[in-house]
Image 1 (spheres, rainbow over the protein chains, first blue to last red):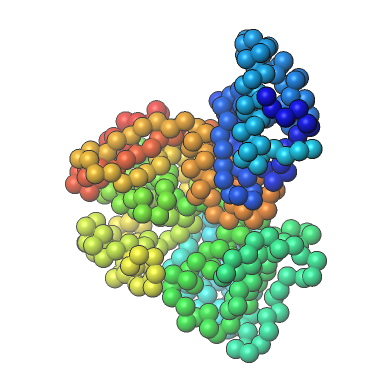
Image 2 (image 1 turned 90 degrees about the vertical axis):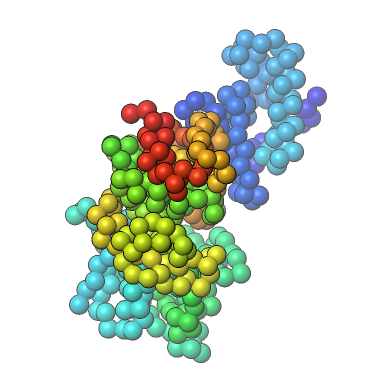
Length: 91
Length: 329
């Protein structure tokens, strides 16, 4: 499971969402870019609006019609990956 | 006497013309930049050229309160609170504001290779154009039968070869290697930024011998043994100043007989565009604007990867047909 401690977006990351719902993140310090699929993009937007990991999992389960356990695991896994890439940081 | 050069639709005005540095700079710019006529209400950018003595300290420097944006072994970039920029090198400083571009040039600047001088000028002018919402982009532009395309890729990916192949099969030509991207009426427009084309002597001979080029290539002094050539009459007849890209082709060199085209997901296309954005890392607000502009361009266009085959050189008509058939119009 993901660390339940509060997280925030790294202010050095610039993001944009394409018309097809996918997103691209650009890390200003490492000069690396990352793409997120539609679900990942939704998670990023919810993180940006200040939702907790629990709230995000609930919304993903509802929006994408998947069970809550799977949504929670998928969101936790994505957040871990975003943290590892330095795109998220401890609040 | 006043000289005005229209670059990416912005009038750069040199006044006086009384210094040798000013005339030399205009010569470099004439070889470097393609003219794109400005609309009548575009405010001019006054270009000042200050000559610095060999042992003098530069005077065109960022003030103490300016923030260092970017630094590499050749140059540093600074931004002031009002958004003005400064670029500082040992032999060449410049200050950029909305309506004024000031160069301070030391004599040793002129002893550099054409490639280095060109690079310094392109960096400065690109930064100036960003202040007017025009973002430099490493790519080529072409148009045929109402279809406008960009050819994009890293150095050595075959952009110029593919471009010249398409020109040979009747495409109109925008610019080689450098474009200015800007918003016009909710669309992203690509404008010609560079006049000269850098290529090898072999490539010059391959593409219609001397008919396409104005003169023999001038040695660049770097850039993989390529020379700088200026378009000749037949290439200028095909020149267009701008286009709204409907398709973007990200190219790479293959070794098959025929070229292959594969549709690219938009997120991948945007990532590849970000790699080719000039000066992307200046500061986060400009990066954000540049990224949004590239995103809108990718959204407005179809995006493909093209793996160039031998047909690019052997049968340009086939390559042209392949590209046209991929685009939905």
